[in-house]
Length: 204
Ligand code: HEC
Image 1 (tube, rainbow, N blue to C red):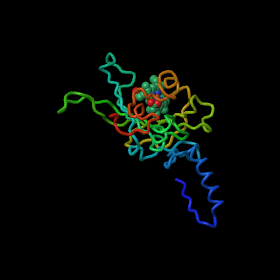
Image 2 (tube, rainbow, N blue to C red):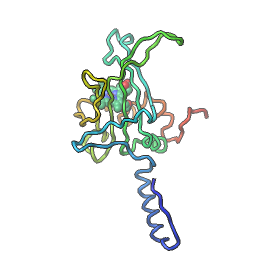
Image 3 (cartoon, rainbow, N blue to C red):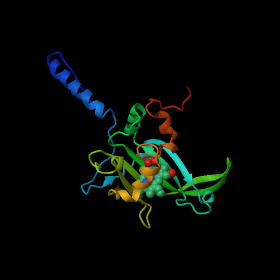
Image 4 (cartoon, protein in one colour):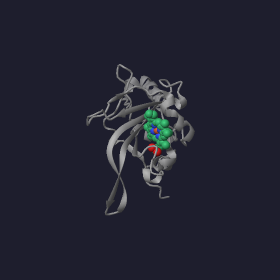
């Protein structure tokens, strides 16, 4: 957030500063800047606190619903950075710097007190999409794609990622996703709040 302290003697400068701030605010309206940071090798650093972001969706595609062999037998939880969510709920658009991360987990069958079902197993990778009209000026939708797999024979994950070649990721997103290459059709948290300012479950 831009804070400007005004006194009588600096009134004109102050007015100008306020005007500039309001212009800046129209392009970058949020108090929360994008969490996207690159290292010197131009790799996107995985923000380690992403589980504190807004969880916008979760999906599971188990083998049992796919003739015994799902293309991806996984559970997935999708997180969006908070500043981008604020912008989305106000404008219905993904701002420059929007970072969406998909945590990919194995899908485990279980029998519990609520019945039989699927629960998340181990996390196997984190996949990311970053929107930036300058950095990815020539990419579809100005999205760059990234991936942070679990390291071989380790508990740890890759912490930085080079941009994935567009062809490897964007195809499905261009052809199948409902809104600016994002699968909002599976994310009621996003469709409910799109351009409405709403954050609660819609009750009106
Ligand atoms: C086979 C089609 C397909 C390919 C290829 C693909 N995706 Fe996706 N992606 C999906 C679908 C479908 C979803 C919606 C959520 C779900 O079902 O997992 C999704 C969701 C996502 C999301 C969450 C935000 C959103 O757009 O809904 C991210 C981030 C993501 N994918 C990253 C990647 C990355 C990185 C790659 C390349 C390494 C990639 N995807 C390749 C189909 C694909």
